[in-house]
Image (cartoon, rainbow, N blue to C red; front, side, top):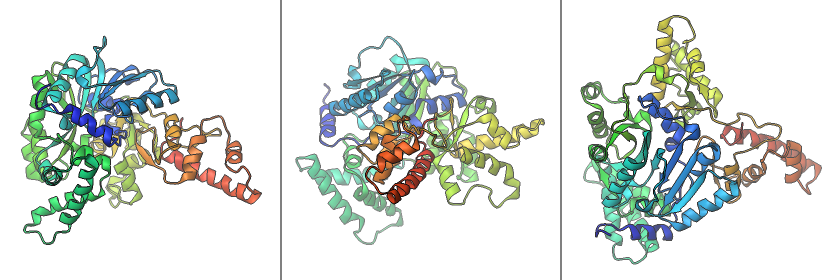
Length: 494
């Protein structure tokens, strides 16, 4: 093992402090497929895809994929044996047969006879030694399908300079302490001291003060495996793009397309960006936004792709409202609310919100935006509005409709993974690949019962066993209200 390879130490840290893994919506294969298609890569259908996730932890991100796309074949690997064992236990409890788990270094993955359509590496590249970063790109070069997609998240400069400065303070302060729990406790104490240390010499130092305040709010998992992780490396985007190119891979797009947009930048900055090539433009957006984190898509360098956005590529896709749009609606700040000229745009966004938590065919959105009229100008305007909403982060595209119900049925059935999770935790995974917090014990108890075998009266009898008639009536009303909330949260099966 090379002298700069501290993989055993990394593995030991995960054994000491378990990683709090969660689903990452923008790494879902169907989301990646839609992004890739929009940027000109004709990826295979996601319904029968092969998916590999390296650094999969306990399967929090991969299990929902296997559970909702039963014909997809999934493989997950991770350094932490305890996490892999949890993934296997959950897989057995759900009765899944389309996912396998490997407790190993990604460099030790056994050869697979078939390529992978999607490779997901979330929270890996910046947090492993250089030899493993090379091995990750080498793995993608060897096993990625001809039109496959690699999802890669990583820390970037220039914004990373602020976060790195705080990490270095914490690491120096705790260097002599023997155990990870002791280091975390000491780091919190120092962060609390420094975040309220008095007046700053320069206003620009407020960024570091804000990072120190975040240390005090971080969980043990976030502190151990991010802020104080070793390694925890940062790169300029151009360096990662060049590293990928060296392995025969090419940058395609961002998993969150709004991160590629010039919205909010000055006219001079946008004009400057317009003169740059694909990769250079992304680097200068990082400079302009002081970006510190990226979630990027790569493909084979020889894969036929065309990064210019074309409205025709939206045909056949399905759209869903993003959390940003739903938050804007709740806060009464939808774009164009005070502008009568923006009625078609509002109709488009309101159509998305009305369908939440489900999806809307893009063709139906076109009609909402006036694109159903026969004249080409109306269609062009509608296409432009949809693209603008997508690039602004108000909507997301999928290649297949979400299997989610807007209203709980007569025999309510919730997502099986969420039912299982509700028995032991507050955070459950919905059908939109998001984590939903359910602090109410009643909601979690109800959710665990929703396997589709009971009607509402049977559910109420189960929950109201031994209760008075008045209490039973109250529980029945609460069941109705909670079922409506669970459906709104995207937890009910269609």
